[in-house]
Image (tube, rainbow, N blue to C red; front, top):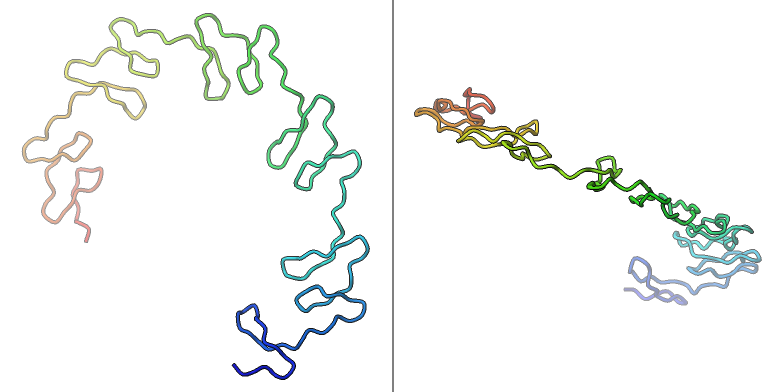
Length: 217
């Protein structure tokens, strides 16, 4: 590179390319050096200069103390202290509430979770969780009557006839069904227990039907 002009020196710049620069001049009277070759008036009394993202130091006032009679909750939030005997708990997103300690269940009831109490289940029953989230008492499942068998979900049904098996149906009720037979000669299995003659050359079976159609090109 060519030498710098008289009185200048080469300095590294942000883009990585050294450039010639004249020596920095003193800041004007009534200003101060804030770095980066910049000058600014001093901060007012009680304020300090902080670095901002864009690289220009502003002069914010110091953070204020919380008002009297409040306490710091974090995240720049404050609130009045909780009443005696209560503690502050986190609620939802960024919320804080005061809450009294959980009390014991009244006599003759028991804790069923979720801060709820209920009377004990009758003899021979147990508490089970239901779809609505509220535990309820339930008697144990009884054995199926003679001549029937358990088909699941607390249901009973007569056994399937000889040679048949119980299968699950779309409505959720198992039913007896004979085993699928082989397709007759000259036909083919097209699914769902159906048989059909093979498609002519150049055609394919249309899905979910016994019809043939032109093959896709």
